[in-house]
Amino acid sequence: MTITRRSLSKLLMASAVAPFSFQSGLAQGKRRLGLIFPVIDRGVPEEGLSLYGDQVEFLIDNVDLKTMTPEGYDSVIDDIPRKAESLANQGVEAIMVMGTSLTFYQGREFNERIVDTIRNVTGLPASTMSNGIIHGLQEVGASNVVCATAYNDEVNSRLVRFLGQHDFTVSHIQGLGIEAVDDILAVTDPQLIEFCTNVAAQSVEADAILISCGGLITLNILEPVEGNTRLPAVSSTPHALYEGAKLLGINAKVPGYGQLLAA
Image (cartoon, rainbow, N blue to C red; front, side):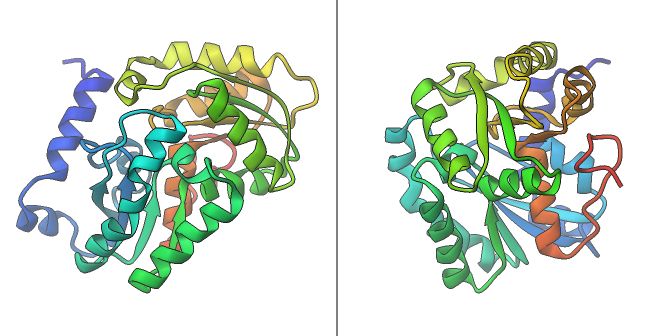
């Protein structure tokens, strides 16, 4: 039987609301990572299960982002501290805010304030998806980045500013122009591999490619993209989960998913 990406997502969403006693039984001996997602119906990330499902129990909370626009982000950003407190009350050991543009759209200092606020509210280690991509680019030694994103031009311009605030040069950026969150799942692996390959071809200076948007499912395309572009690839969800695993103090390296995650 073939399971589509959309069907797999629905199955994993269902697992996120399974009875607590069942989930606890499965998670005995695992570390507990809290994830705050921008969309209301996002369940346990399939990429997280592939990478760390044998070591980590993921607890999920969500805000209700409708559009990937500054106005959309403004409408939900104040909900994050309350969601973090709820996850802390459920016994998580660290918290990740799983939205790239949600955390970079007002710049570096704003992203840092989100982390500080969560730490103050919960007393727990915390980080964001935006920190995940920054630390990932730093770890692969990048300085000049080519960016393939899901965003419109306005959000792309804010990403360029955010990367510049961390001393990265962006030699080329191109987005899919997606604004409605519900449209992201329509992007297939072959389409995304081709898109990233074509975007990377627009820059001869780049020493890494960034694939930005937590809604894009990218774990299994990292190695094909690296093979096509000859560049290390850093991507929102895989490398935010990598960041979260490091917050927990576990071995975050997993071979088979690109240079950064390789052992």
